[in-house]
Image 1 (cartoon, one colour):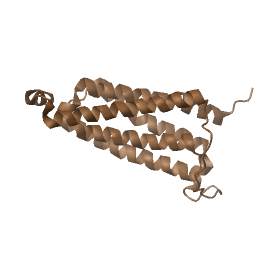
Image 2 (tube, one colour):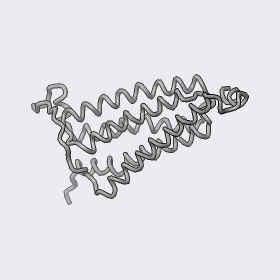
Image 3 (cartoon, one colour):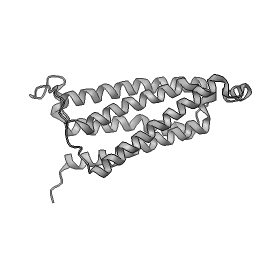
Image 4 (cartoon, one colour):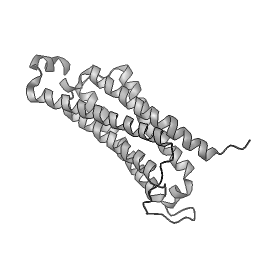
Length: 196
């Protein structure tokens, strides 16, 4: 029996890593809701979370909608780098404004490593495209954007899109709670208690 390792890696990424990423992101939202971050870190932390969600979304959507070439791998690399920098900002800001529980810290561990894991699978399965970014490997850097048929069944594809949309809506709701708290809809004593 011959195993196509590239196909196996692609399926592992699409059917395990990506859903895990979405699920862990939703768990993180529940951690924020339990911590009531709107009364401590406020909307600023929610804006950071939305930034990270958009950075991850860029990499995922480009990978699903376009043929992966040098340009797409470069976009994914840049999105990952931006996600890393924003992730550091998120932790620094949150640590300065509220207590982060052990459960939330563990969730952050996953949210930090899953993007690198996903990117690694793309790089390994598209190694010539990755090398072309640096002018190596004997393959020219392809800057074209070529739409493709999503590499998954339509039902799963739209399920994944719906899950990502739900994730986005949850974090927009988190931002709304923070803005509402800042505008004085929360009792000042409540704010003081949660900012300790």
